[in-house]
Image (cartoon, rainbow, N blue to C red):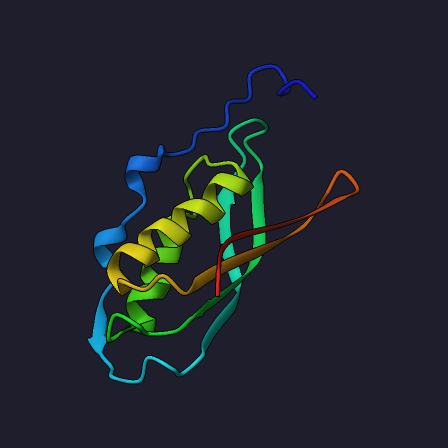
Length: 128
């Protein structure tokens, strides 16, 4: 669908995503299974300029001796809000950024996007 004449949708680039917001704390329990979920993730479709809303589930084992600090995770997730990024790419980006700070190989990120155009989209990156 073309953008209505005279209308421009502005959105930020991926350089505005803030992995530097992510903080961890030391946690020595590599066998503990941790799940963090939110229904409040949003970004912008770079094709249409329309918002994408998603449920995000983060599952990991803190093998690297680190846990993600939740307030820092929330600020990181908010940094996607005005960024133009495809759904699949957002899922991979979250996975890559968390893998880097958590230093664990047992991490999975799943996103389940609200339907758009009659299509449901679920993306999963990583494995436990």
